[in-house]
Image (cartoon, rainbow, N blue to C red; front, side, top):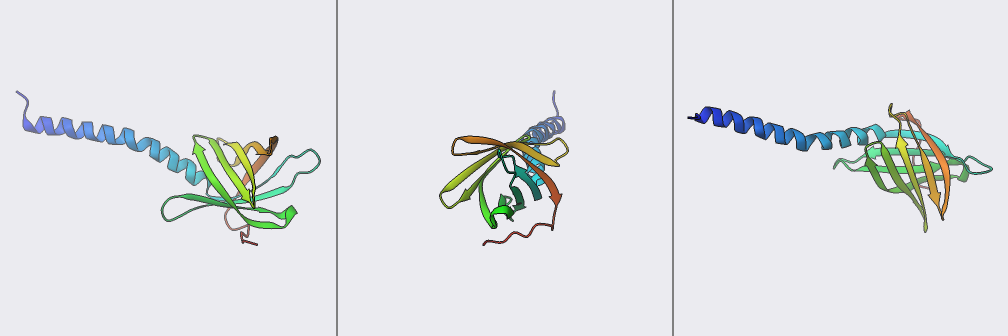
Length: 143
């Protein structure tokens, strides 16, 4: 005969096991999201030029990741970033400026210190590299 105490213990253990399985993917995603928070600097490798990129990821109070970009070579600041997606170490986001969209698809390094990948715009693809700079060094304003 199984006692009520034994049944409760088994049920509690089963509940904790299921809860852990459900929470682990969320914790991993939150860790990746927090790895992006902060400021990043780098460039796109076009054929003749390598324009500087400054990017800042912030977390809203609701836990949503947001970002803005500066393009110092073009005197453009506070450009909106949309469609931020993180899947494991795969990172993608879109720069939206007027009616122009550019997609960044990259990979977050194992040490969370850089993102490298492809910049895709108007059917053309170019390599890009961003390095984490920490916080407080890039002024992000809308111009």
